[in-house]
Image (cartoon, rainbow, N blue to C red):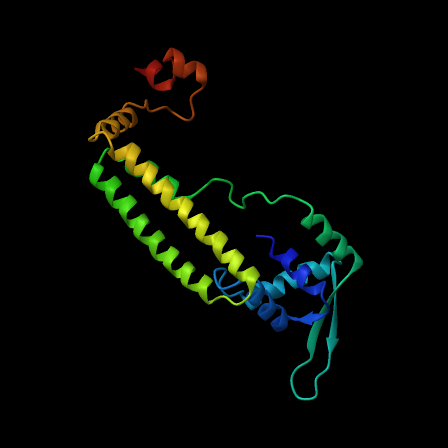
Length: 210
């Protein structure tokens, strides 16, 4: 996640210290993101300082410990402008834990397993959708409302995938699951240490000794 660029965007509005930035970030992105860890934020600020994208100034306080105030540099503004002009690829590509779970359930050949996996995920997504809808209705900031709407649409798309998986995997009385399980069982076991020629000719060490 490009949180460092979000921090640069906040600092573009003026100097700020760590806890101010934490509060401003959480208010800007909305509750669907969750709280920003202050320790992680200071790690980001340290990295930005090392890269000369921000400068830090220690300011004494009469009672409390000194406060460190961060200010964006011209290089930081240039980096922020570069980031804003580029498209954003998916942070994890299309790798998804649930995709792997569906794959494992389908290869098991068990309709009950597939049904349980899909049912559990659908219940989770419906609860998530209700929560997001409640947060969106309560949001006063229009940008936060927009982000919550986007999050809801992501969840709706995930629900559509659950429906698709159910139709494909459970719509033929188990015939596809049986074929998938049989195909998985028929995969030949290969020795990772043998060469391609040995696997084709059967002349690997075990065969030669045999």
